Image (tube, rainbow, N blue to C red; front, top):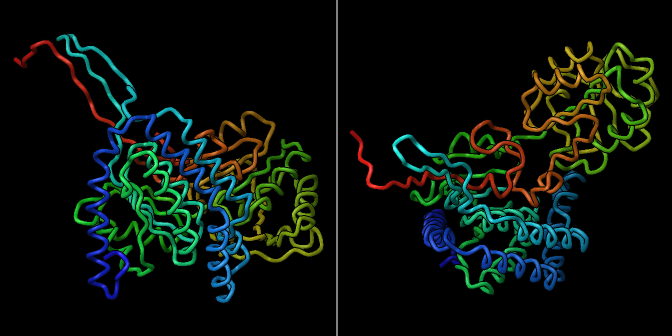
Amino acid sequence: MLDEVKNKDDVESVMLEIGRRAKAASRPLAVASAERKHAALIAMADAILARKDEILAANAIDLENARKTGVASAFIDRLTLTEGRIRDMANGIRAIAEFKDPVGDVIAEWDRPNGLHIERVRTPLGVIGVIYESRPNVTADAGALCLKAGNAVILRGGSDSFHSSRAIHACLVEGLKAAGLPEHAIQMVPVADRAAVGAMLSGLGGTIDVIVPRGGKSLVARVQSEARVPVFAHLEGLCHIYVDASADLAMAEKIVVNAKMRRTGICGAAETLLIDRNDVERLAKPLLSALLAAGCEVRVSDELAGSVDGLKAATDEDWATEYLDAIISVKLVDGISGAIEHICTWSSAHTEAVIAEDPAVVERFFSEIDSAILLHNASTQFADGGEFGMGGEIGIATGKMHARGPVGVEQLTSFKYRVRGAGQVRP
Protein backbone atom coordinates (compact mmCIF):
# COMPACT_ATOMS: atom_id res chain seq x y z
CA MET A 1 0.00 0.00 0.00
CA LEU A 2 2.79 2.44 0.91
CA ASP A 3 4.31 2.13 -2.56
CA GLU A 4 1.05 2.70 -4.45
CA VAL A 5 0.36 6.39 -3.92
CA LYS A 6 -1.54 7.88 -6.84
CA ASN A 7 -3.53 10.85 -5.54
CA LYS A 8 -4.13 13.08 -2.53
CA ASP A 9 -6.57 10.63 -0.94
CA ASP A 10 -3.93 7.91 -1.23
CA VAL A 11 -1.38 10.19 0.46
CA GLU A 12 -3.77 10.82 3.33
CA SER A 13 -4.48 7.14 3.88
CA VAL A 14 -0.79 6.24 3.62
CA MET A 15 0.14 8.90 6.17
CA LEU A 16 -2.57 7.78 8.61
CA GLU A 17 -1.25 4.22 8.32
CA ILE A 18 2.28 5.45 9.02
CA GLY A 19 0.97 7.26 12.09
CA ARG A 20 -0.81 4.16 13.39
CA ARG A 21 2.31 2.06 12.90
CA ALA A 22 4.45 4.63 14.69
CA LYS A 23 2.05 4.81 17.62
CA ALA A 24 2.02 1.04 17.94
CA ALA A 25 5.83 0.89 17.77
CA SER A 26 6.22 3.65 20.37
CA ARG A 27 4.76 1.54 23.19
CA PRO A 28 7.32 -1.30 23.18
CA LEU A 29 10.05 1.19 22.35
CA ALA A 30 9.28 3.27 25.44
CA VAL A 31 10.11 0.29 27.67
CA ALA A 32 12.91 -1.20 25.57
CA SER A 33 16.07 -1.86 27.54
CA ALA A 34 19.10 0.36 27.20
CA GLU A 35 21.04 -2.67 25.99
CA ARG A 36 18.64 -3.39 23.15
CA LYS A 37 18.63 0.20 21.96
CA HIS A 38 22.41 0.25 22.13
CA ALA A 39 22.58 -2.91 20.02
CA ALA A 40 20.23 -1.42 17.43
CA LEU A 41 22.30 1.75 17.12
CA ILE A 42 25.57 -0.13 16.69
CA ALA A 43 23.93 -2.33 14.04
CA MET A 44 22.70 0.82 12.24
CA ALA A 45 26.21 2.29 12.18
CA ASP A 46 27.62 -0.98 10.89
CA ALA A 47 24.97 -1.14 8.16
CA ILE A 48 25.72 2.43 7.01
CA LEU A 49 29.39 1.59 6.57
CA ALA A 50 28.67 -1.76 4.93
CA ARG A 51 26.26 -0.15 2.46
CA LYS A 52 28.19 3.05 1.79
CA ASP A 53 28.45 2.31 -1.93
CA GLU A 54 24.65 2.05 -2.15
CA ILE A 55 24.29 5.33 -0.23
CA LEU A 56 26.81 7.11 -2.46
CA ALA A 57 25.06 5.80 -5.59
CA ALA A 58 21.72 7.09 -4.32
CA ASN A 59 23.32 10.42 -3.44
CA ALA A 60 24.78 10.68 -6.94
CA ILE A 61 21.23 10.54 -8.35
CA ASP A 62 20.11 13.34 -6.02
CA LEU A 63 23.16 15.46 -6.88
CA GLU A 64 22.63 15.01 -10.61
CA ASN A 65 18.99 16.03 -10.30
CA ALA A 66 19.92 19.04 -8.14
CA ARG A 67 22.60 20.30 -10.53
CA LYS A 68 20.11 20.18 -13.41
CA THR A 69 17.96 22.71 -11.55
CA GLY A 70 20.90 25.12 -11.15
CA VAL A 71 20.79 25.38 -7.36
CA ALA A 72 23.44 27.29 -5.39
CA SER A 73 26.76 25.71 -4.44
CA ALA A 74 25.85 25.95 -0.75
CA PHE A 75 22.81 23.77 -1.42
CA ILE A 76 24.96 21.22 -3.26
CA ASP A 77 27.34 21.16 -0.28
CA ARG A 78 24.50 20.40 2.14
CA LEU A 79 23.22 17.64 -0.14
CA THR A 80 26.57 16.01 -0.88
CA LEU A 81 27.66 12.80 0.84
CA THR A 82 31.27 11.58 0.70
CA GLU A 83 32.96 8.56 2.21
CA GLY A 84 34.19 10.86 4.99
CA ARG A 85 30.73 12.22 5.70
CA ILE A 86 29.30 8.70 5.72
CA ARG A 87 31.96 7.67 8.26
CA ASP A 88 31.06 10.74 10.32
CA MET A 89 27.41 9.72 10.14
CA ALA A 90 28.19 6.23 11.42
CA ASN A 91 30.48 7.60 14.12
CA GLY A 92 27.74 10.00 15.20
CA ILE A 93 25.35 7.07 15.67
CA ARG A 94 28.00 5.19 17.66
CA ALA A 95 28.48 8.24 19.88
CA ILE A 96 24.74 8.39 20.53
CA ALA A 97 24.76 4.68 21.36
CA GLU A 98 27.31 5.26 24.11
CA PHE A 99 25.31 8.02 25.81
CA LYS A 100 23.56 7.29 29.05
CA ASP A 101 20.00 6.16 28.36
CA PRO A 102 17.79 9.06 29.51
CA VAL A 103 14.58 7.05 29.90
CA GLY A 104 13.77 6.44 33.56
CA ASP A 105 16.41 8.87 34.79
CA VAL A 106 15.32 10.52 38.05
CA ILE A 107 15.68 14.25 37.43
CA ALA A 108 14.70 15.26 40.97
CA GLU A 109 13.18 13.74 44.09
CA TRP A 110 11.97 15.01 47.43
CA ASP A 111 9.90 14.08 50.48
CA ARG A 112 6.77 15.83 51.73
CA PRO A 113 5.94 16.35 55.42
CA ASN A 114 3.11 13.81 55.08
CA GLY A 115 5.60 11.08 54.11
CA LEU A 116 4.97 11.06 50.36
CA HIS A 117 8.10 10.55 48.28
CA ILE A 118 7.95 12.31 44.90
CA GLU A 119 10.19 11.70 41.88
CA ARG A 120 10.36 13.53 38.55
CA VAL A 121 11.39 10.95 35.93
CA ARG A 122 12.36 11.24 32.25
CA THR A 123 9.98 9.60 29.77
CA PRO A 124 9.87 9.44 25.95
CA LEU A 125 7.79 12.03 24.12
CA GLY A 126 6.09 9.28 22.08
CA VAL A 127 5.99 9.81 18.31
CA ILE A 128 8.08 12.57 16.78
CA GLY A 129 7.60 13.90 13.27
CA VAL A 130 10.75 15.35 11.70
CA ILE A 131 10.37 17.46 8.55
CA TYR A 132 13.62 18.48 6.90
CA GLU A 133 15.00 19.55 3.57
CA SER A 134 18.26 18.90 1.75
CA ARG A 135 20.56 17.35 4.37
CA PRO A 136 20.40 13.54 4.04
CA ASN A 137 22.50 13.07 7.21
CA VAL A 138 19.53 14.32 9.23
CA THR A 139 17.92 10.96 8.46
CA ALA A 140 20.58 9.17 10.50
CA ASP A 141 20.85 11.81 13.24
CA ALA A 142 17.10 12.07 13.82
CA GLY A 143 16.47 8.34 13.66
CA ALA A 144 19.27 7.53 16.11
CA LEU A 145 18.46 10.30 18.58
CA CYS A 146 14.75 9.50 18.69
CA LEU A 147 15.47 5.80 19.20
CA LYS A 148 17.93 6.49 22.05
CA ALA A 149 15.28 8.59 23.79
CA GLY A 150 12.68 5.83 23.36
CA ASN A 151 10.62 7.61 20.71
CA ALA A 152 9.19 6.39 17.43
CA VAL A 153 9.89 8.81 14.58
CA ILE A 154 8.36 9.66 11.22
CA LEU A 155 10.93 11.21 8.86
CA ARG A 156 9.90 13.41 5.97
CA GLY A 157 13.02 14.46 4.05
CA GLY A 158 13.12 16.88 1.17
CA SER A 159 12.48 15.73 -2.39
CA ASP A 160 16.02 16.82 -3.29
CA SER A 161 17.54 14.20 -0.97
CA PHE A 162 14.86 11.56 -1.54
CA HIS A 163 17.12 8.76 -2.80
CA SER A 164 19.91 9.43 -0.30
CA SER A 165 17.54 9.49 2.66
CA ARG A 166 15.84 6.27 1.62
CA ALA A 167 19.19 4.49 1.36
CA ILE A 168 20.18 5.67 4.84
CA HIS A 169 16.77 4.79 6.25
CA ALA A 170 17.14 1.21 5.00
CA CYS A 171 20.25 0.91 7.19
CA LEU A 172 18.35 2.18 10.23
CA VAL A 173 15.60 -0.38 9.71
CA GLU A 174 18.26 -3.08 9.37
CA GLY A 175 19.59 -2.08 12.79
CA LEU A 176 16.14 -2.18 14.38
CA LYS A 177 15.49 -5.68 13.04
CA ALA A 178 18.91 -6.92 14.18
CA ALA A 179 18.12 -5.86 17.75
CA GLY A 180 14.56 -7.18 17.75
CA LEU A 181 12.94 -3.76 17.93
CA PRO A 182 9.83 -2.77 15.92
CA GLU A 183 10.87 -1.89 12.37
CA HIS A 184 8.19 0.81 12.25
CA ALA A 185 9.92 2.67 15.09
CA ILE A 186 11.71 4.66 12.37
CA GLN A 187 9.63 5.31 9.25
CA MET A 188 10.40 7.34 6.15
CA VAL A 189 7.56 9.05 4.32
CA PRO A 190 7.62 7.27 0.92
CA VAL A 191 6.31 10.15 -1.19
CA ALA A 192 7.55 13.62 -2.09
CA ASP A 193 4.02 15.04 -2.32
CA ARG A 194 3.66 18.19 -0.18
CA ALA A 195 0.32 16.83 1.01
CA ALA A 196 2.32 14.46 3.22
CA VAL A 197 3.66 17.46 5.15
CA GLY A 198 0.14 18.78 5.64
CA ALA A 199 -0.96 15.41 6.94
CA MET A 200 1.89 15.35 9.48
CA LEU A 201 1.10 18.88 10.63
CA SER A 202 -2.48 17.77 11.29
CA GLY A 203 -1.12 15.22 13.77
CA LEU A 204 -2.07 12.08 11.80
CA GLY A 205 -5.20 11.39 13.79
CA GLY A 206 -3.57 12.20 17.11
CA THR A 207 -0.62 9.85 16.65
CA ILE A 208 2.15 12.51 16.45
CA ASP A 209 3.17 14.13 19.74
CA VAL A 210 5.62 16.79 18.49
CA ILE A 211 6.94 18.13 15.17
CA VAL A 212 10.55 19.13 14.58
CA PRO A 213 11.10 21.19 11.40
CA ARG A 214 14.62 21.60 10.05
CA GLY A 215 15.01 23.75 6.98
CA GLY A 216 14.59 27.21 5.54
CA LYS A 217 12.41 30.05 6.71
CA SER A 218 9.47 29.13 4.47
CA LEU A 219 9.32 25.56 5.77
CA VAL A 220 9.49 26.59 9.42
CA ALA A 221 6.91 29.35 8.85
CA ARG A 222 4.51 26.83 7.31
CA VAL A 223 5.02 24.39 10.16
CA GLN A 224 4.46 27.01 12.83
CA SER A 225 1.38 28.33 11.02
CA GLU A 226 -0.34 25.02 10.28
CA ALA A 227 0.79 22.57 12.97
CA ARG A 228 -1.89 21.26 15.33
CA VAL A 229 0.70 19.63 17.57
CA PRO A 230 3.60 21.18 19.53
CA VAL A 231 6.62 22.32 17.47
CA PHE A 232 10.32 22.52 18.30
CA ALA A 233 11.07 25.49 16.05
CA HIS A 234 14.41 25.59 14.24
CA LEU A 235 14.47 29.00 12.58
CA GLU A 236 17.13 30.29 10.20
CA GLY A 237 20.64 30.78 11.52
CA LEU A 238 21.11 34.53 11.19
CA CYS A 239 24.27 34.46 13.32
CA HIS A 240 26.37 37.47 14.36
CA ILE A 241 29.93 38.09 15.51
CA TYR A 242 30.76 41.26 17.43
CA VAL A 243 34.46 42.24 17.58
CA ASP A 244 35.01 44.62 20.50
CA ALA A 245 37.74 47.26 20.86
CA SER A 246 39.28 45.04 23.54
CA ALA A 247 39.62 42.05 21.17
CA ASP A 248 42.88 40.31 20.39
CA LEU A 249 43.17 41.03 16.65
CA ALA A 250 44.94 37.81 15.67
CA MET A 251 42.30 35.78 17.51
CA ALA A 252 39.50 37.82 15.94
CA GLU A 253 40.82 37.24 12.40
CA LYS A 254 41.06 33.48 12.93
CA ILE A 255 37.60 33.21 14.48
CA VAL A 256 35.80 35.46 11.98
CA VAL A 257 37.20 33.61 8.93
CA ASN A 258 36.42 30.22 10.47
CA ALA A 259 32.90 31.25 11.53
CA LYS A 260 32.05 32.38 8.00
CA MET A 261 34.09 30.16 5.72
CA ARG A 262 34.64 26.73 7.35
CA ARG A 263 31.27 25.55 6.04
CA THR A 264 29.15 28.34 4.67
CA GLY A 265 26.02 26.21 4.24
CA ILE A 266 25.40 25.29 7.90
CA CYS A 267 23.04 27.14 10.22
CA GLY A 268 25.90 28.09 12.55
CA ALA A 269 27.82 30.00 9.87
CA ALA A 270 28.25 33.69 10.68
CA GLU A 271 26.24 36.00 8.42
CA THR A 272 26.93 39.44 9.95
CA LEU A 273 30.13 40.90 11.40
CA LEU A 274 29.84 43.87 13.76
CA ILE A 275 32.99 45.91 14.44
CA ASP A 276 33.45 48.32 17.34
CA ARG A 277 33.65 51.85 15.94
CA ASN A 278 35.88 52.84 18.86
CA ASP A 279 38.83 50.92 17.34
CA VAL A 280 37.98 50.85 13.66
CA GLU A 281 41.46 51.85 12.53
CA ARG A 282 43.02 48.76 14.14
CA LEU A 283 40.24 46.25 13.44
CA ALA A 284 38.46 46.94 10.17
CA LYS A 285 41.13 46.62 7.47
CA PRO A 286 42.71 43.36 8.76
CA LEU A 287 39.33 41.66 9.33
CA LEU A 288 37.91 42.68 5.95
CA SER A 289 41.14 41.75 4.16
CA ALA A 290 41.21 38.32 5.83
CA LEU A 291 37.65 37.60 4.68
CA LEU A 292 38.36 38.71 1.11
CA ALA A 293 41.55 36.63 1.02
CA ALA A 294 39.51 33.59 2.08
CA GLY A 295 37.23 34.04 -0.94
CA CYS A 296 34.31 35.69 0.83
CA GLU A 297 32.14 38.41 -0.72
CA VAL A 298 32.03 41.28 1.79
CA ARG A 299 29.11 43.70 1.89
CA VAL A 300 29.71 46.72 4.12
CA SER A 301 27.84 49.70 5.53
CA ASP A 302 28.64 53.14 4.06
CA GLU A 303 31.23 54.00 6.72
CA LEU A 304 33.41 51.09 5.66
CA ALA A 305 33.25 51.69 1.90
CA GLY A 306 36.75 52.03 0.48
CA SER A 307 38.46 50.52 3.54
CA VAL A 308 40.05 47.96 1.23
CA ASP A 309 39.59 47.10 -2.42
CA GLY A 310 36.88 44.64 -3.46
CA LEU A 311 34.09 45.54 -1.01
CA LYS A 312 30.42 45.77 -1.97
CA ALA A 313 27.70 47.99 -0.51
CA ALA A 314 25.29 46.47 1.99
CA THR A 315 21.57 47.26 2.09
CA ASP A 316 19.02 46.85 4.87
CA GLU A 317 18.05 43.54 3.28
CA ASP A 318 21.54 42.18 4.04
CA TRP A 319 21.08 42.53 7.80
CA ALA A 320 18.07 40.19 7.53
CA THR A 321 19.62 37.63 5.18
CA GLU A 322 20.89 34.14 5.98
CA TYR A 323 23.25 33.73 3.03
CA LEU A 324 24.36 30.12 3.57
CA ASP A 325 27.08 31.06 1.12
CA ALA A 326 30.48 32.79 1.03
CA ILE A 327 28.94 36.22 1.67
CA ILE A 328 29.00 38.30 4.85
CA SER A 329 27.58 41.70 5.79
CA VAL A 330 29.71 44.04 7.94
CA LYS A 331 28.74 47.09 9.99
CA LEU A 332 30.33 49.47 12.49
CA VAL A 333 28.54 49.76 15.84
CA ASP A 334 28.97 51.93 18.91
CA GLY A 335 30.59 49.42 21.22
CA ILE A 336 28.73 46.67 23.03
CA SER A 337 25.56 48.78 23.30
CA GLY A 338 25.41 49.19 19.53
CA ALA A 339 26.12 45.49 19.01
CA ILE A 340 23.34 44.46 21.36
CA GLU A 341 20.90 46.84 19.66
CA HIS A 342 21.71 45.49 16.19
CA ILE A 343 21.58 41.84 17.21
CA CYS A 344 18.30 42.22 19.11
CA THR A 345 16.81 43.94 16.03
CA TRP A 346 17.95 41.50 13.34
CA SER A 347 18.88 38.17 14.93
CA SER A 348 16.92 34.93 14.48
CA ALA A 349 17.90 34.02 18.10
CA HIS A 350 20.10 31.15 16.94
CA THR A 351 23.80 31.84 17.74
CA GLU A 352 25.91 34.95 18.42
CA ALA A 353 29.58 35.40 19.34
CA VAL A 354 31.58 38.16 21.02
CA ILE A 355 35.33 38.56 20.57
CA ALA A 356 36.57 40.60 23.52
CA GLU A 357 39.06 40.65 26.40
CA ASP A 358 37.04 43.08 28.53
CA PRO A 359 35.03 40.96 31.03
CA ALA A 360 32.41 43.71 31.42
CA VAL A 361 31.70 43.57 27.67
CA VAL A 362 31.38 39.79 27.77
CA GLU A 363 29.04 39.93 30.77
CA ARG A 364 26.73 42.43 29.04
CA PHE A 365 26.72 40.31 25.87
CA PHE A 366 25.82 37.16 27.80
CA SER A 367 23.22 38.93 29.97
CA GLU A 368 21.40 41.11 27.45
CA ILE A 369 21.27 38.92 24.34
CA ASP A 370 18.72 36.12 24.49
CA SER A 371 19.72 33.88 21.60
CA ALA A 372 19.82 30.11 22.13
CA ILE A 373 23.64 29.93 21.96
CA LEU A 374 26.14 32.62 22.95
CA LEU A 375 29.90 32.23 22.53
CA HIS A 376 32.89 34.18 23.82
CA ASN A 377 36.15 34.09 21.84
CA ALA A 378 35.00 31.08 19.80
CA SER A 379 33.60 30.43 16.33
CA THR A 380 29.85 30.27 15.74
CA GLN A 381 30.51 27.00 13.87
CA PHE A 382 30.60 25.32 17.29
CA ALA A 383 26.77 25.68 17.37
CA ASP A 384 26.35 21.96 16.95
CA GLY A 385 25.15 19.16 19.21
CA GLY A 386 28.23 17.07 18.50
CA GLU A 387 30.52 19.92 19.53
CA PHE A 388 28.50 20.32 22.74
CA GLY A 389 29.19 16.69 23.60
CA MET A 390 25.58 15.77 22.88
CA GLY A 391 26.30 13.45 19.95
CA GLY A 392 24.11 14.21 16.95
CA GLU A 393 21.22 16.63 17.05
CA ILE A 394 17.99 17.07 15.20
CA GLY A 395 18.49 20.82 15.03
CA ILE A 396 18.99 24.01 16.99
CA ALA A 397 15.72 25.03 18.65
CA THR A 398 15.33 28.81 18.66
CA GLY A 399 12.09 28.92 20.63
CA LYS A 400 11.87 29.23 24.41
CA MET A 401 9.63 26.31 25.39
CA HIS A 402 10.86 22.84 26.41
CA ALA A 403 13.93 22.47 24.18
CA ARG A 404 16.33 25.29 23.31
CA GLY A 405 19.65 25.17 21.51
CA PRO A 406 20.88 21.77 20.26
CA VAL A 407 18.04 19.23 20.37
CA GLY A 408 19.74 16.05 21.50
CA VAL A 409 18.74 12.95 23.43
CA GLU A 410 17.65 14.63 26.68
CA GLN A 411 15.66 17.30 24.82
CA LEU A 412 13.66 14.51 23.13
CA THR A 413 12.20 13.40 26.45
CA SER A 414 9.47 14.71 28.70
CA PHE A 415 8.90 13.68 32.32
CA LYS A 416 6.32 12.29 34.65
CA TYR A 417 5.94 12.24 38.43
CA ARG A 418 6.07 9.08 40.53
CA VAL A 419 4.59 9.48 43.98
CA ARG A 420 5.13 6.73 46.58
CA GLY A 421 3.04 6.58 49.75
CA ALA A 422 2.20 4.33 52.66
CA GLY A 423 -1.56 4.70 52.95
CA GLN A 424 -1.80 8.52 53.01
CA VAL A 425 -5.16 10.12 52.27
CA ARG A 426 -5.88 13.79 51.85
CA PRO A 427 -7.85 15.37 54.72
